[in-house]
Image (cartoon, rainbow, N blue to C red):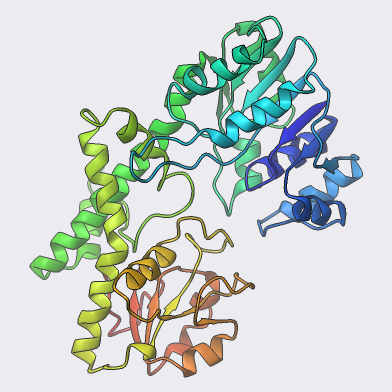
Length: 407
C-alpha cells in the first residue's frame, strides 16, 4: 500500500493514477476541507481528464484521510516555496511531512520525495531530521527522490507518457520504486543518485526559464527600437537550429517561476545568467503595466477604471493562479498605491481579487481597453465581442484582427 502525502496539483493526480493502475493507495492531506471534498466524490481543481481518472480511482477503492498510514511506501508531494529574499528553497513542508511519517513508519519502509527541491535539500534538511529522530537511513528508512514532470492543462497525459528519473541511495530500492511508477508510466524511467536527480529537475525548469527570458528581453529591445518582435522571431525560427519562444506578460506556475531561484540562492556568485533571466521574467508584469499607460495615452483613455485585465491564471485553459503574471501586475499596482484594474477570468469562480467580474459581457461593458493576459479558448472563440474595444494582446490570442496592440 502507498500513502501519498499532499493532495494538491501533483499529489492528487499521482495518487489517482497509481490507484487506477492497481496499486492500493491512501491519500493524506492536512486540509480537512480538501479531504472532505474528495470523500464527497468531487475533485478539488479543474484539469483535463482528472474527473475520469478520479472515478477510476474511486472504483479501485482509493481512500482519503487526514491521518498518516503505517505502510511500506510513502510519496511526499507537498509545496516547496522559496525565500524571496535569499532565493533559497524553504523545505519546511517537506521536513514536517517526513517528521509525521516517521511517527508511524515501520522499519525498512521507503520515503519518496516527489516535491521539487534544490540540489542538496535532502542532504541538508531531510537526512538530518531522520537521524535526529533516531532512525538509520538505509536500515530503518530508505530515501528516494522522484520529482514530478507534468504541467497543468496536460497532467494526465504527461503522467502517463513523460520520462521520469528516480534518485536513490540504494540501486535496489531505486529499481523497486521504478517498478512502482512503471505501473502507469509509459515513458523511460532512469535510476540515478539523489543529488543528481534533484539537480536534473531544477535544471530542466531553469533551461525553460532562461529561454523564455531571452524572448521577453527581445520583446523589450524591439519595443524600444520600434520593431515587430513577432515578425523577427518568425523569420529567425526559419533557421533549422533556431527555436525562439514567444514573449509574454510574465512567468507563473510553481515550476519555471520558482525553481530556477533555487540555483541562484545556493550559488549566488556563479548563477549569473540564471539570475538575470529570472529578473527579466519577473520584470514583465511591470513592463505590461507601462505598456498599458502608453496605450491609454495614445488612445486618449484617461480613466484607469475603464481598463480591464482578461485572465487570472498563469496559463491558458487551467484554473491554476499560482505566481500568475496578472496577480504580479496587480501587486505592482498596490505598491504604487494605485486602484486595481478590473479583472475577469472564466475559469476562476471565487473572488480572489478586488474588482473581479464573473460575467464576461458585463466586464466588457464596463471597460474600454482590454488587456489579454491569458489566451483562454473562451476569448479566442468570442473575439467578435471585442469589436469597438481597444485591445492590448500579450498572448497573441487575437491574430488576424487589425489594430491590436502587442508587447
